[in-house]
Length: 201
Image (cartoon, rainbow, N blue to C red; front, side, top):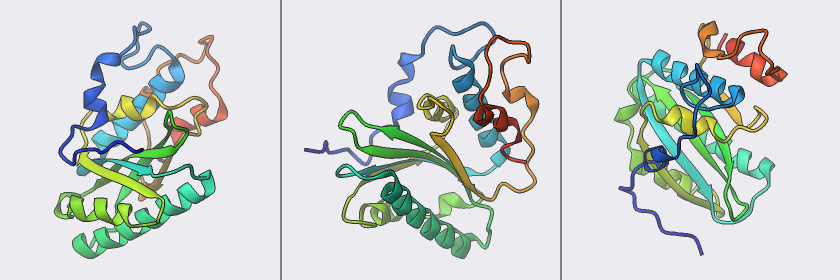
């Protein structure tokens, strides 16, 4: 049985803020360099947006394949993008998505969505749109995004491919400061991790 969630509940990154591990010197969010770098990149993306931001949680009622989960997510984001463009006249909506596997082995998503004028859209409408997107769509909760959302999304990273981005990123160049480790560090980044500093280029 799926737990019922109050629409007025706090976003999960605020509820679990006390779970922060001991940090490596020079780190602000995580002891490992991969998640630290991703958290810094997400924080940079939030600051750079200069726009309204939502923290969104999207779930499914039952087990769902990655292919179908992402197809349903893509359809919801496509509709949101169209609704945003119709409401604001802007095509510059962008998002960052983190994938989480729940204890009951069902995938769900956490997203940061940015856009000037995004707050003019009805959150309840877009929560309802997700919940009626497909017969297996679960609940959707939308909150204002704050700084604590960056490490919350980054904590789900194990290989670097659990985070994706979409929408309008043209013209943005990520500063080198988001990479926390020196080139001669004993930590060797994967191709995915090295690509963070170029991700928004």
